[in-house]
Length: 287
Picture 1 (cartoon, rainbow, N blue to C red):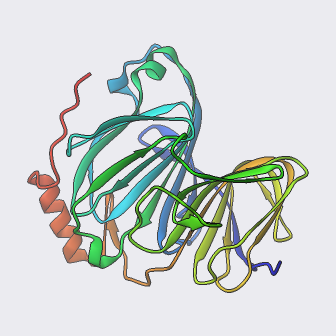
Picture 2 (spheres, rainbow, N blue to C red):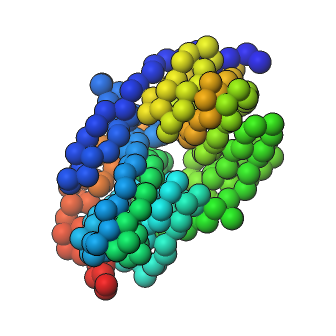
């Protein structure tokens, strides 16, 4: 198989987000985005227990103009929003939200894990929305592990969350062409992945050790592949978990401020005004 060249290898940095220490491979070191992907946060920790749910996670906050997507790998997260959605997603599942013209939501470890403690691991990434869809009606989709289709082979499996891979279609609705995968390759096994040559491709390793297109990759490394022909050839030196974010670049101007991603500063100011005046909805949590 012809292999794509690697444009960049990035080791995730530790960042402090409201007192929570996360691994952040994107944005980092002058790399603002890999169009259409804007941000990747990887949380892995053990909840201590003896906590109230109201005191953990992230309380109500607004978004506009992009999709924050969360892959849960261990533990559970509860989502509530101003549309009236209230869902808890467990290990292997996905929280998919298109913020559109505005939504207010909260994201918290569920009450059981807050009280009893236990491991919690998830990745949240931000997918930019094409300009023509930024003011669409928002929506939310909780996707369980059982309802996530898979492609399996000798020593590997791929969960197809969005887009299509080898004829398997993901359940999450997308607003621009992309394929989003969660994968695991067992020690000593190989996996070749073919994606459209027009797609930008990110591979982020949660853990393990791999050789990808001839380059060594360890846990919490991100690979950015050069555009063009060729795929990914993965050899697992140790059993490894990873995600692949691939998509058609939007090639549109990005203006962002906190939880808003638009195309110019006027739109950002409008987003701030609309959030402050309640036009992105109100969420009152009950515990």
